[in-house]
Length: 136
Image (cartoon, rainbow, N blue to C red):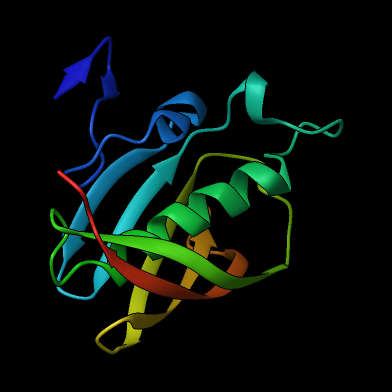
């Protein structure tokens, strides 16, 4: 669903903070999730690059989606641990690509990348999530 060009709903759930930063859901196929974050004035640091905190938020969400990809409407994911490494500044719109590397009954291990429009990897992250049933 879209309103004024902003997607309302991220892979079956409403996440107000992701709406706030403008994260766009692209796709979820199997164990791969893709999102997009546009460079906007509200998200930049003093140098005009996308702030690292905004990138980490986008990574955390995208990784959590792929962690619960086996049952996206009934399962939630709580971050246990996440490490992020920044290689280069994000000077334009970026795409976040995440994959679930291993999922047990209650824990999922995921990895992701932030890439610019040329495919250059700007940041990487690894995260561990606790899988929790969603209350409907």
